[in-house]
Length: 237
Image (cartoon, rainbow, N blue to C red; front, side, top):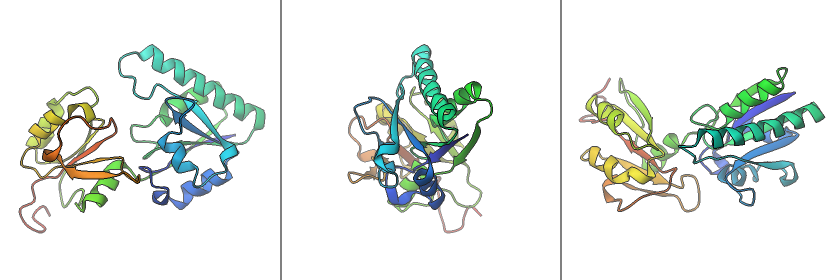
């Protein structure tokens, strides 16, 4: 029995690795996370380009829940039981698709921990995927990091700006995830740094724009790239 967490990238089916495509194509069941069982989530939309639709099964998670830990864990438990039941019944290989990378702020870690507790003999694997910060850097034509620059990745769902100010003071390249509701404060902190923000990365309606041009909130999964100050070519080597 195997459970493979597959990173499917930011949303463009062409931004999947060959290994990830092979895992999706050969798994007996491909589980995908959704907020609503009636909706096709971003992960599933990507998976559909590479896996037979009759092998795809949706698992409901409280993906945007930040306050109610009990509610989050109820969904983790239910999803874990479903995957564990499938593995016990078939003895086969299941894949779990997650946008971006399964080891970077992803649901897969919680699912894998739950399944392992229920089926200790399960083999767990992950296939890395392209992250939103890489996709944004490519779309914006900006190097993510150079020379000896630090790269700081900050989740900003709760709007705590302290870590952001500290990283900017060190002249690090900073990437902000999940900051859609706090764009005005992030833009103020990053003023003068040439920051860019991307939403719906990898999708047909992808939008990349200067952060200081944003007026109002952006989607929850919007990504901000605040580059370190680069005064000359190779200056950070």
